[in-house]
Length: 229
Ligand code: CA
Image 1: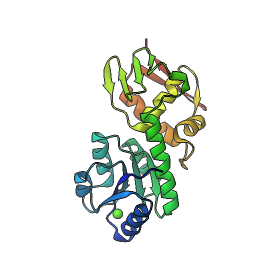
Image 2: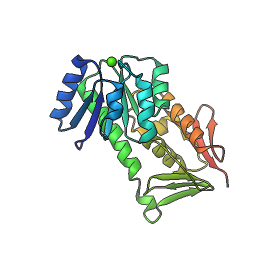
Image 3: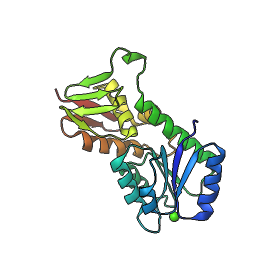
Image 4: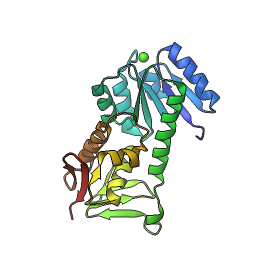
């Protein structure tokens, strides 16, 4: 993995200190924010590790605020392991979720997976679209090079994970896409959670794309993208 500027948002010194040391050993530049306010004031990072229980601002609000202004990959670190928290975190735009306690190796693997996904989303070219920088399906245009999406001419802001999910759908318009297959193609199976992850991201894609782009649920199988003409 290439080295990155990592923002670690964690108030507990006994967790933060060894993490900072481990990340620095890997060559990463780490900015440690001990609370939500300093996280939001921190310099732009290439990856964010975000604790949910912070002394000032709820970690979910920090996640939402970070996501509102950038597409930086966010991995939530939390002692809360309940499914509802995972779903909420992912809905707020986090890219992955790690439950404490976790090992440094596991964290590094997740960071690697999220980064790969982000880079792939930013530079999806692929042999099949060498002469074609954009996928167009009716009113939906996915610009692979510029990493932009528009519906009927209006730009839609997507997170890197949502973008890659949409690209997966757009490459096979009208075809049924199974949840397991989406996990494999978009998440590289690195996500140890359930197919619920797919559902959460599809729900957020639907919300962002609006009614002119239809993502149908195929019961017991998965989804299918249908774009209105
Ligand atoms: Ca905490």
